[in-house]
Amino acid sequence: MNQKHLLRFIKYKLKTVPHEEVIFRDGKVLTLEEVFKSLNLTGYDLSIDTLDMHAHTDSFHRFDKFNLKYNPIGESRLREIFLKTDNYINGKYLAEITKQVFEDLESSKYQMTELRISIYGRSYDEWDRLAAWVIDNKLVSHNVRWLIQVPRLYDIYKKNGNVMNFQDILINLFEPLIKVSLNPKCNPKLHVFLERVVGFDSVDDESKQESPHRKYAPAESWDFSNNPPYSYYLYYLFANLSSLNHLRAKLGFNTFLLRPHSGEAGDPEHLISAFLTSHSISHGILLRKLPFIQYLYFLDQIGLAMSPLSNNALFLTYDKNPFFNFFKKGLNVSLSTDDPLQFSYTKEPLIEEYSVAAQIYKLSAVDMCELARNSVLQSGWEASIKKHWLGKKYMAGGTEGNNIEKTNVPNIRVNYRERTLQSELALVEYYTSLSH
Image (tube, one colour):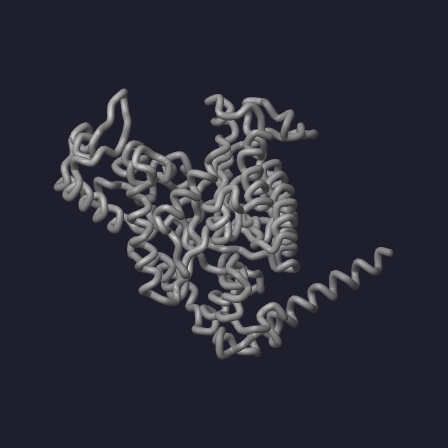
């Protein structure tokens, strides 16, 4: 969804259902028309400029200003009405606009997406409400799977009295999932929703200063007012996901990947934490400054879903982005969208990423096919779907796993990547043996 899509939807609602009650504020229920009157706005005043959700130069290295761009016209009440699942109208408007996005994807036929949606961990019934929103509004599509993003906001929940300690967040995040895995009949909607969830993400402003600790208190003892560091969040997400996945695999249910945002800014240690715990990461642009960690990501082929257009607006100009350098070296990189509402100008944000990269880096057709293949491999889609896209032996690796009729990637390119990787692994093994 881009700004024009949202603008058109808001205008349509303001024109067709102005008297619909949409929000409870200051002790009374307001209609959509009353909300806009309180803002001194009419449908005629609305435009892309007044919506003001695009990340411009004022957001560069200012994540605080970027976060404000999530509020249409700078008003949090409009964000609550149109872009929240848990509000006075039970996320009705967001469900309607999400269905329109689904229809666009289904008409394009060959675009599949993993949509991110937040679970905060501040209350026990969040999963119930989210699952009900998805299932009751029939937000199910062959082209869509869901990624759960967990914002790192413990300090805010603690301040507001939502949680007593970090353990409360973990209980709210994982206990409902364990219960429904053991007994799907206790919450059928959540069980069905989880079948369409492929992974978990960890998000927040990585550039925030973190207090170094020699020793970390366990989750049940972390009742301090300050936020735990990035590595603390990732450790507990990884540990609990591992236990949950073991249980679900044993019961024959789908499992989940850990795919956090990492290395966009801030402490390089984030990338080490992600390397030890994650299937793949989003961004990873700080690897350009850390050759030894970059080498580890190469050897283990940890996925990097990179979004140069997003980085260009927030942290790193396009000409300095390491994406193409990583790709040439053989790191497992793909192109991904990131917040299309803030960064994209068209209704095809992924095509924007590919077309700009193709022009700037002069990517060949083979390059783009390889990036698309990497994207499928990094994704959390079911193995049966990946076999349809890449071929039945896609897990084999090398030329044996490459079906050129499906991927359009020549065997000579795949063979080059495989031989380069194997030679580096052999080199590491050789020098390791000398130390014994």
